[in-house]
Length: 223
Image 1 (spheres, one colour):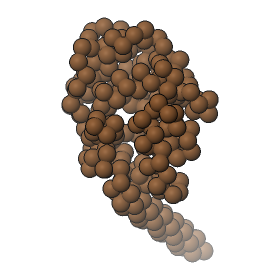
Image 2 (cartoon, helix red, strand yellow):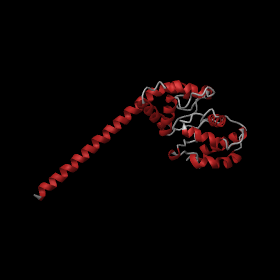
Image 3 (cartoon, one colour):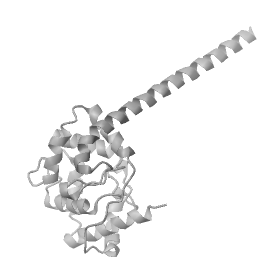
Image 4 (cartoon, helix red, strand yellow):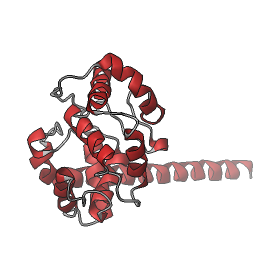
């Protein structure tokens, strides 16, 4: 009887191991399929954001390679729904709104977000001039409470990473927040909050200073 129970226990253990293996294999296959679909869909994004996700200022397309998956997913959904990218003064957003609607389902959005987040991070060349990173470090203290001391971002605060981002895009975004071009739609609660925070930067020089400091974080992050 004892031997019989032992055989049963062993059989159950083998069965559970097989089930776990099948589940893991199925999940990995699904992930691979999503990544392949994301790569296929990203071909359209690459026309502006470039193949390696470096971005192109000419097309008002920032660097996106390696951005957190949750953030890319959320922003694409915002663009698709019109919560973001429908203000007539936001030229870059107005381009992204119709482009995002080429993603026909939430699954397509998720696939692209997964592919973008898996791309190797890039360090776009600095093009903004006149910023003082020393002054910017003091100004960044307020930003750090949400975006992290190293600019790494914090999902719990719905704050994206700022490192590896195009400096011209950071300047442009802060200017749009201050002007109410971004954050005007009350449905976009995170952007509304950023609109208020951006007003802590009193002028264009302060914006350049804080972005100049953020750019130095790219260097500090290197191994």
